[in-house]
Figure 1 (cartoon, rainbow, N blue to C red):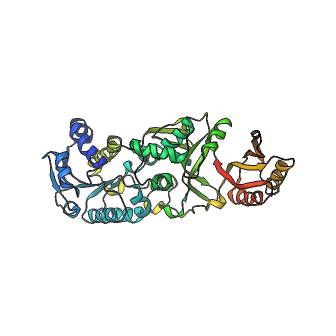
Figure 2 (cartoon, rainbow, N blue to C red):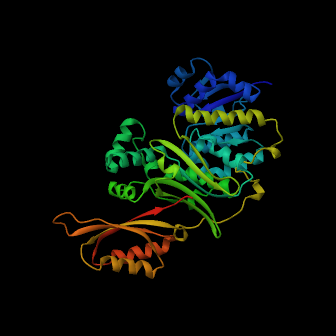
Figure 3 (cartoon, rainbow, N blue to C red):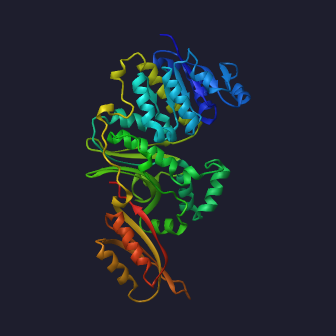
Amino acid sequence: MKPVKVGILGLGTVGSGTFNVLKRNQKEIRGRAGRGIEVVMVADRNVEMARKIVNGDCEVVSDGNLLVNHPDIDIVVELIGGYDVARDFVLKAIANGKHVVTANKALLALHGNEIFEAAQNRKVIVAFEAAVAGGIPIIKALREGLTANRIEWIAGIINGTTNFILSEMREKGLDFDTVLKEAQELGYAESDPTFDIEGFDAAHKATIMSAIAFGVPVQFDRAYVEGITKLEAIDIKYAEQLGYRIKLLGITKRMENGIELRVHPTLIPAKRLIANVEGAMNAVLVNSDAVGASLYYGKGAGSEPTASAVIADLVDIARLESVDPEHRVPHLAFQPDALTNTPILPMSEVTTSYYLRMQVKDQPGVLADITRILADLQISIDAFLQKEPLEGETLVDIIILTHMTQEKNMDAAIEKVENLPTVMGKVTKIRLEELM
């Protein structure tokens, strides 16, 4: 069979990795795909840098339109990131009858429905394994490996920057700002880390997984997103003393009245495997009815780990290009006419457990007042920890772990607790998930 001809938009970290791995492993890739996969053009604004990377092996242009309109290119690989420009290139490629491979989770979380519909109408494939958890084949696992299962929930550490920061805070007892600076110096965090530390990157990925798991359109605008910027080292320390670790989790669950879709710091029992995922590594825990719990672990970012997922998509398309479009694996696992309008639940209706920390006056009756407020809102206490005040201090920390309750009840209780004259300042609230 004739080789598949590929054009790469963006020759940065992932683009260069994709080019180099394709070149290095071309014999193995050809053997698996049944045909060659050749990069014939790359487009990058930094033409000189791109020419050094490809070293004369393909044409280099600065205008992506030349690539997406090129008559000989079969697959466009979009690796430029962002929303608007990437969306325009992807839709033009689809309109031209070209298959698309992308690592752009933000693009799919915001514009996925439009892109998948366009691809369906044009009978081309949009593949996006690299968009979630880098080199971990979680999209293929959800769309194909677990296709016989009713997926109940997914919980993932899907942002390496935040996991590195939380790991360092726990191990070294440092505060957030200090560890963020270290992460930037080591290259784990961008100079502007907002998308990572505020949870948006993880929420993009969780949105995509939720759509595949539960057969709904992508709905990033309905996701609850909370980052790690307000976490304090003392809470990580107290969580450890209580047998928990704090991770930024992307969580999506099937409930009777809708689907939960949320990203936030979460206490996890330290004995769980996912609680022991450290550094910049990623892990996704999937609970389904037939298999039970399955854990997918590996590098969630980086040049060649992400390139591995991009090339896996290229191989899939090379194999499936000649297959009747109606018999290909659907973009979101479910056939387009089988997608449902199951609602995404607002955070106020989510039910989970909680870690609460409050600073109170060291005097009798304080705990009784707090527990009375919790009881009035049907919130039961699972465990609590009271720290002894330091010599000369009149304030003490109280830490409470609760049983399951609705978020709106917890927020109402916190508001009442904060109004007690014996409680100083704001109550720290962190959600808790047992995960098993």
